[in-house]
Length: 314
Image 1 (cartoon, rainbow, N blue to C red):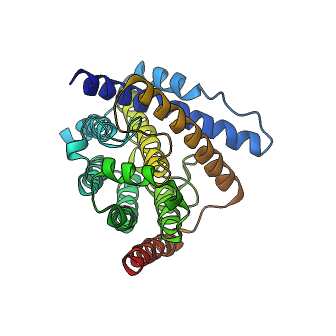
Image 2: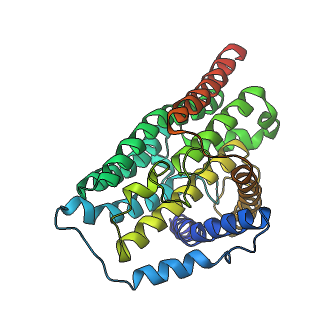
């Protein structure tokens, strides 16, 4: 019981404190790849501290949804941090760690964020909400199908047991069905976290905004919480991509050595994924909005092919 509580604290601290650093490293890498010095990797922490000290400005047309959404987003991400295998194969809430619950929790945050964008009554907010819901509706089925392809091979939808199954047989990471599911999940990760080529987090142009349009009315501590939740979402999606598909370094027992080994392995895998995302975002342009469904349909096709490959090979 004490060990589970300690692992819970570690995972919440790692996700909560490490997410801004992940975003900062990604920004720095992108700047260096295009020949600029760029911001410090620690800049997101300074931005959050500055926002927490600023005054909150709220439109008179908003309701309780607008004020509650930042707290819902942060709470949702912290609960997911206890479900996702971050430092050990069996997370603190392993009994609830199935794929369906995970997708529902991610969708809960997306739902409240879309409502908050509409609640402000601005044209930008409504536009961003409609685009965000459309992207989520196309992306979430791919998440389910891609992870179900793994679950079918592991004979369970429990995330911890999936990790343990693939951890015992690491050669399965080179299986074609596994690689197809990895590619599908990687594309969905870019879409769900608002990265290029689906969205551009560094712009406020009307024709390109999706996530930024929904949070345009937020300020002060509310904006700090929304940005922090967005960083945690990126961290959690990358962690799922790293530990579900390449679960090397994770072990079952939740001892201090196992937790440390899991965190070191996660740091290496996140570094590789962050480098891959940085290279991708500096070499591709943002897709036109009407081309995004084609990309997500392609990712769904990859996930479906992975599922079919697992069924036919079994």
